[in-house]
Length: 163
Image (cartoon, rainbow, N blue to C red):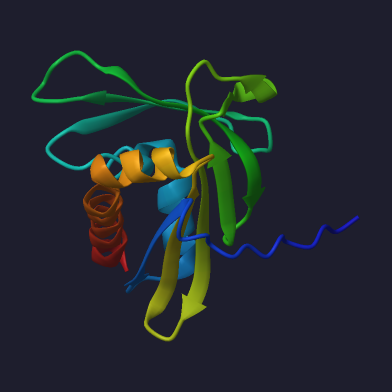
């Protein structure tokens, strides 16, 4: 059975979005998202570093990252669950659940990452949903645009060097 994708329309009161054109093939961007060693190279804004603790790329699979700032010990960064993984097209994850569909103690986003062909390479999009306006505002104030924009730029730099 083939499931059709859900068409989502961002709500300006609840959601934050960002997009950019990455001058590399979609397959290269997908590989950087799905290979834990490549993912660690761009997921957290430098100079902080990332370590992937779990990346079970299937619906219900665990998605856990750790971060280190200034050479400190790695500490929890993201503890989430994949909701959908559509090869080379879309990854959906939430930190409202952890691996195995277990409820998370704290969480406030569901993110949809999309990859589409573009004449210059790949159109990369991040659509981040929040349960209420307060969480959306909090995420924006925490630096959503700078943080997610920075990691998208780091992703682009990684895959464009290899293209």
